[in-house]
Image (tube, rainbow, N blue to C red; front, side, top):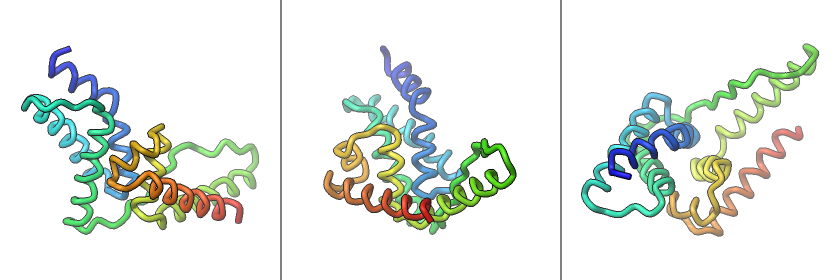
Length: 161
């Protein structure tokens, strides 16, 4: 597979994961779109320069994380509100209202999580292992476990109220 095909394939397979990750750490949609594009440009430049990238997914997520955090710091973005766009499937009006309230509590609690907790949750939801998450975010495997434990505990508490 030539360089163009490799980057095109990576883009098709991973662009939404990168974009969703950037939204999860708190970037607004327009910034997440720009950074997603930048990640793939950097991948092309890196590969074109002769540098080997063993795990494109982990490499791209690491670049996205670094660019995202730098952008948030430089531009002072506030944490973006997450949008759960799946409609409630409840049968009655009361069930729909209860479901909407649960979603509202979950959104609120997710927005109160630290950037690292949100990042760990999103990457874990994408199926990455603790070691891979740690490499992407730049923390130890035990720290990943602790961030996930605290985040999940907080979300469980919020949903059980």
